[in-house]
Image (cartoon, rainbow, N blue to C red; front, side, top):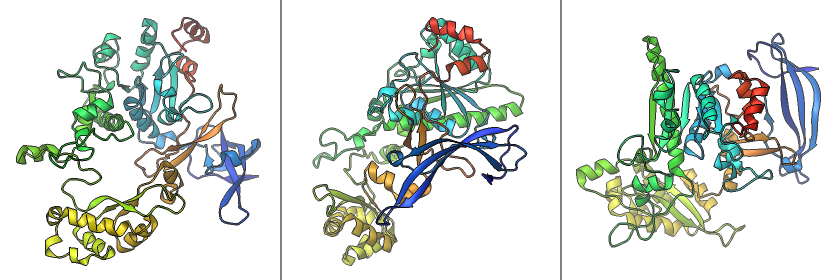
Length: 501
């Protein structure tokens, strides 16, 4: 018995796909849906079947309360439909900035080959929380859709293999200290004679040029040098500067922002290369991404305001300088967690929105000509903030959300990751994905791992990751034989010599 899986899929030969699906039931009190069982069924899809799929067998059967999650299908979109299909990216970076750029490019169709050191791999593999197999779930997320190839770049033979891969690639992403690739004989002047159209996307703390270029630069340091850390914290009432140390967001923001710039710059370079080819030119370029400059891109009007008015913006606590009201306000604690502080964020800086907010908080006296526009409200910020807090502190967060939403006032609760995963909006948008992880080498069966999707959502582009970050060197032999034409004996010899992992 067959069933129609989809219409319009273009395939050249019969393929096998695995579909994981689940059966559902109601809990005893009918209050929620429960997952009863999970099936993994092996299916055959034939190019002549017009979407009709033949069920070959039930490959596995699980009783799965322990791994309950959303139903997922492991079939893949036709890669030719993705914007970056046909683009090969050689990822030489590690940790966050370069690999995050690779993650984004890979989700939209690029083939990403990640080069890692044998035995140890990317240090991120063992950062923060570790799963049952000793690997960081964070690594499984940022290395999604990538092929892991273990090559020792410290050895000339390893660098020669990487050079051969680079000659067959479209893009190199790296986030080493400037000059490292040149030292290894893998810089633009070394590789462009063999692959003139190769794009180098280079992420560093301060860029490839300038007096600070040789400095090592982690995100935390570059966030400080960009001025970002100075404006984050609570102000000293006397000086307007920082009262105590700056407050750091509990993420490596500079790395991720630099990764976004690197991915954006890579796509621009690919578009430029395409236009050059139309003109008969076959030339790549360098995308020079500085973490410092990436953070400067987030600094809004701080530089022009200083230039024209001499204004040095300082920290502003939970509000933002020059826009009123937008702040975090205290609420009554939840009954389930009476000892945990509860906060709500309200953004009512639009003039008409502000008037509606004042009606909700029962302070219509704070409307009218003296409060009508933002610059009026900035002059009276303290009065306005106290009025809002005096109302929110008498209500729970849910009560505030209900009242503000009914009045058309933007409002949001300050939530934890648990709240995010359970959010109806996040679930409706499919913003959290379940991705299967094989239990390779752990002695454990495989498991589902939740990770954020890749954004933005592009119409017609599948956002489900194809696979989680792989085991170290999982694709080494495959890439060496298929892409470089090495024999199994040659691969084995390189492994025994410590060149490959």
